[in-house]
Image (cartoon, rainbow, N blue to C red; front, side, top):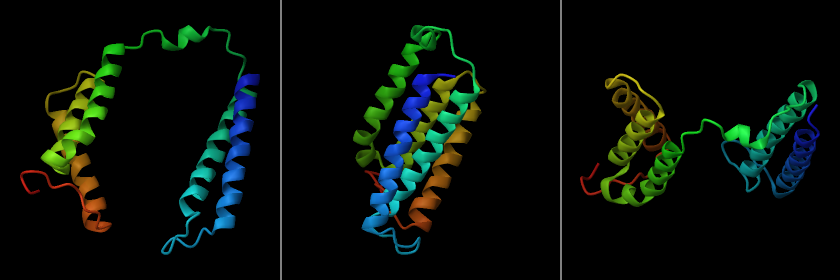
Length: 152
């Protein structure tokens, strides 16, 4: 049993309960007509689920005997820096080149940096991701996405 994980899980469970109660007070509304507390309520529910998972797993598992530095052993810091740099750069590139091209490029880069795979896998995966998100956000939800200099 890990006392630190249990106490932090209980802390976040308390925060999530507070968020849910205040969201109910401000009005959740319905799915087709959400109120101001709709999003905070569901975020509180998700936080409560994760908190309960943390408390449960920390209760059922043995105490970890390692050091905190062992958690970072084997981390490829150059990949971490490249991912952070690309995620930082993405919102600046997005208005100029548009959603489709910027997201396609970002996805190819992120999938490629994850590991060694066949050459066509990042391209096909990025295409599918961009296509699905475009259909969901632009066609189904009617969200205006940046068109960029090419007009699409």
